[in-house]
Length: 376
Image (tube, rainbow, N blue to C red; front, top):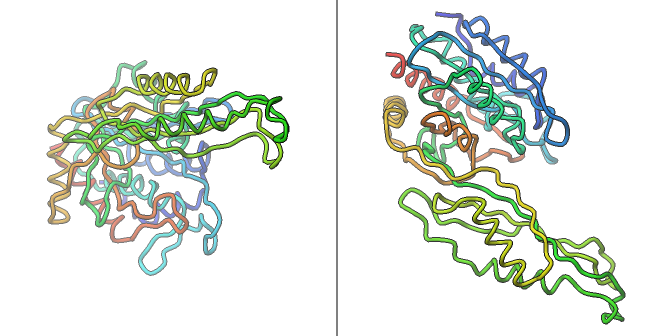
């Protein structure tokens, strides 16, 4: 058995290294220094240019043969934002709570997993950590490039656990077995700029954009499925290039996001929006970015292992859910069965992000139980 690692202290060390997405450098150094004494061979590379890069990725591997169990996560965090009491990267414990950006999403989970590996007595099979510096961004140079790396070496895990904060009211109450897809779209309606007093010399793009918005807002995408909630379309921004009260704008743009279940494909939704936009506002342009497709991991060995480990540690059986946002599972499902499980997520991305010391320690013990079951 390797020297013990305190998951809370290790999480605090990671938090004290600011790593706003896309991340690289020092925070990966800290993780590598913890993994090498545990017998991991660490591979790191940086790729990409702004605005989606540069991004650092890490694949750390130990052992050989089957079973091959992968743990996936990210060291990047969202910007701290204004309103913190003190340094958002202080990584200090206050009344039994670890506070700092990344404490919840998801540096504490990575620390909990590394601490669990340090307590293992079995060296059977293969363990890998798949860690990216761009999960909170567009992931252009993140997890998809890790998958490329694995495929080039004809290596893939038999199952993957992602340490995203999935619990809701208490640790262990929710495991994510799938995620909805996500697509962002921008609809631009062209016009002709002019003075509001002379509308015959201009073409106002706002009314046709309003018709597009009304048509899309009236859509009923679906009623959901047994595993997924209904898909939803939400407008997130409406803008024109001028704010002057006496100017008809030369264009108008609306931004929207669709979170969709496995009844849809992202490309089909984009085509639907394009058709409605062209019908209501001829000449409009739609730009889209599909963040990921919906996915569902079918019941199997990974479900049973994770559920049993949680129940043994907490005394309660978790709910298997597909609710909430997306995760890098949308990419990793290409390799093998994937589930997400981690801390209670009430403070993720919020001012004052935090995780209780007790939950971090218990999460590490759950991860250890999972590893023991996989490697037994």
